[in-house]
Length: 190
Image (cartoon, rainbow, N blue to C red; front, side, top):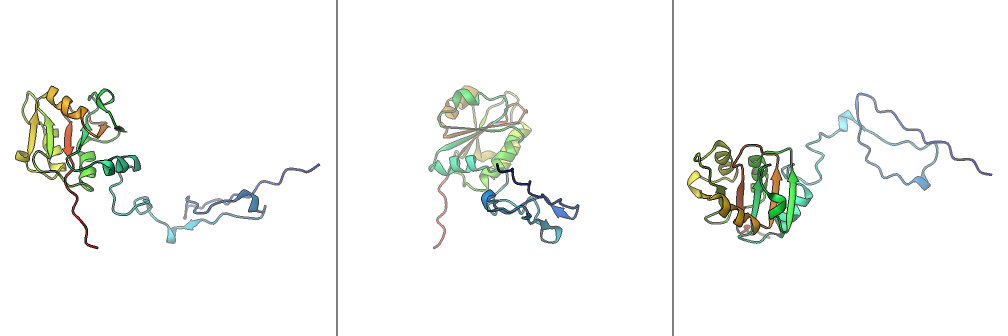
């Protein structure tokens, strides 16, 4: 009758060490005396430096990047506030980003996507005129106020229903919705 192997020792990380383990453990190859290496503070990396891809806004998730990549020239992405009927209108991609404002999400998208020619940005028309959240959305898109098109509420819903991607944010300000159209990505030299 065999007895269960003794549990492997787990090294304790001191305050001077970071709690990230960068090894693949193969249980069958481990011996009871095996220890896990740690990264010391001298060689540690910050959370920002630990991103898997370089030069990407941390708001851009893998799911969002895949959806944006599938879009073609002229296709639209809707960045919706928390009040928007996103589940009802989304036909292809619905992505939830509840902890972020609409302008912050549009800023991240704009970091990897160029705007289409007019109209690159549609905003839902407010009865109170241009609202601060809409000015922030226009700025996040990298556009001048006159380059954004104001669209009547129900016409905006019709446009949103045709969008490739709808992102529901945690934006609580009313009329914090934008429809951004993808432009032609510049060709990088070989």
